[in-house]
Image (cartoon, rainbow, N blue to C red; front, side, top):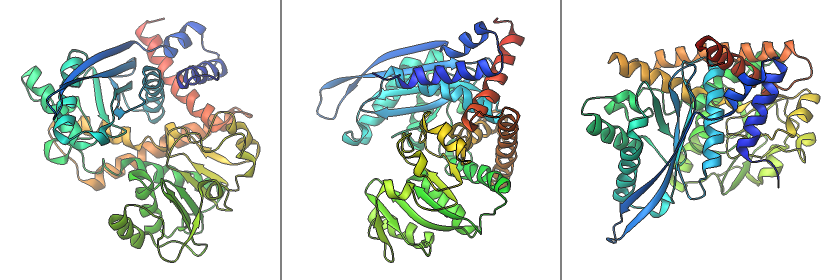
Length: 414
């Protein structure tokens, strides 16, 4: 049996710490979650029967700031996965330089089989159980798989009832009407777009003279496609859960967005031919954007990837075994903890706006986001160049671990 996702995350911290010549005791502090919470949530279902759901919240590290991370509603959710995701959130927050640590939550449930009323009871019940451990200065949840702004609104409302005061900063990813930030919905795609511009500068190309393939057309995939198209990019292939479409002359994204609004999927879009995921990944494009699920580029297909840049908008689309193969082939793979960190950066902006009670226009949010993402890319690329032989993922891990380690030492934890 291979390593678990959490063990892989710990191994990444160990490797980064070793490259940085950090003391083992500092590395050991960063490798382990500070607090793991497991709760049972009884919910009276619509049929009158009570069902008990299992929930988790993991606070990985708060040396730099309060824990931060999403809540997933997922049938196969495990504590091990939540620990892994919380660990990666510590790295992600540190990579983009926001004053937050890593956290993550999850509930074992199938939200697709639940009514809105049941989901609301579940969301409020979860907050009832974890309320003593969260707060704007302790741990700030956000949406993740199968949770959304409405879920966050219920959770914030429940928390405010418990503490008997307004505390909008306890949750991010809220609807704008109750303290959400403009630009939050498309922040992950927007952040990836800003990072991509920096990566393209290194290859001497621009968006207008580059060819793209995008795997995934959900919130993030459709956002990046829209941004690329508006900026003159040629996108020749796109896929989603149902299948893929291909047109070597380029796909009209404005028309595709209208089409998917009606049909729900990209398949059968007029003027395109079908393509499967495996073939899409291996197309002769300048930039490949995996924005779907993990483990898509592996040691089995890494030597067949023809893109010169990979923008990892999904979590873990490139395996650790594939990384060195891509690096040796001079393919610049922008790691997920940088490429998709736009969401947590704008979540941080939401917390700041909540604290001040003063809200920014979307242009201001995007301008601040661009500065953060550009600086983060530069720090990682500099680290990558400074240490010949490492991958971009290792460079990102090193930037993050170095920042967390500095905070741990300054606090005197080691």
